[in-house]
Length: 371
Image (cartoon, rainbow, N blue to C red; front, side, top):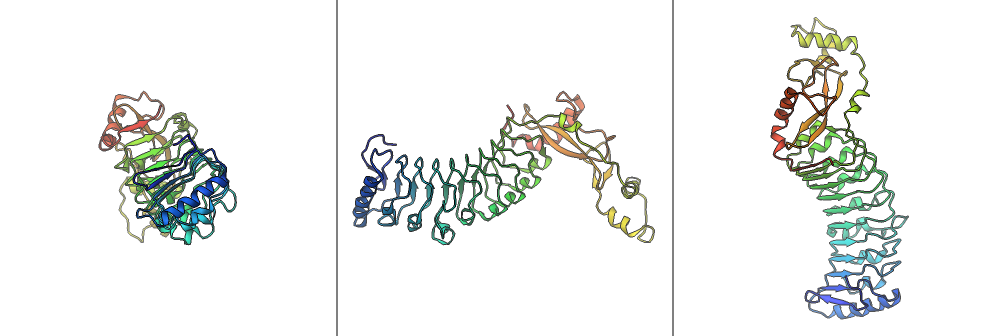
């Protein structure tokens, strides 16, 4: 970035750097007008325009004239409360950096954005450090987006429509007030980096295991007490950041267990004792219920459960150093857990069981950041 008041052109005139100019917005507007006039007859189009830290309160009107080939626009660090219709004239824009402004109110983004050519060209959008309380609906229609940054705003939730962004590879939502992760987030097939740190998230939906392209998951400084065991299915995950979360075993002791119903007790007895029967031997509701049985994950148990189960935390050793708390389900409180749920210092047998189950995942997890 330039600290002087001089404009700088680089890379064969393809970039114009007007950063940190100590001039009035009117003077900057005039400078852009003249530059736009120059570009109209130039052989090489201007591809990158840098306008950060210029105390702009609105986009320069000159953007709508002479900058149609622009691919990158940086207006970060200004005082913008809205990105005006001038933005829609940049038909080939691929990267828009507008972080650290005052965007977030009604009309922060131009009307017609979702129907403009930008919905097909824009690949990188950075709106971090603004005042958005919701993800703008028009952003969720930018189908070509590969990177979306909305960190450091005032977001309360992630909309289910986030699944519209099928090309998304990097989603940065750290530093907001998000409490839940919608399962629809799992419908992003190309998502590689997911940053949800510094929010108020309490749990992780098991559907995230469907993010088979995910390499980095940042959940530090939230309220997460456990992770679903399905997270072991993230076969490409290399980094999982969990520091600053209440990952405590005491959580297990607070869980309640409701006794099985008579229907479930009957179904369990039939399944466990392998009692033979014909459809004429049992009531219809019991016949239907028997098809809903789930096997207890404890290999030493062999039991089944239906609606009634015990949730417990199991610590799985991913990389020989970190023990990651995963939620699993047992058929009853009397069932012996494969891993101790009351202490990090489990028995040697439970350590062996834990390592056996996580053996496949151990070599895949490069970093598990708990501290």
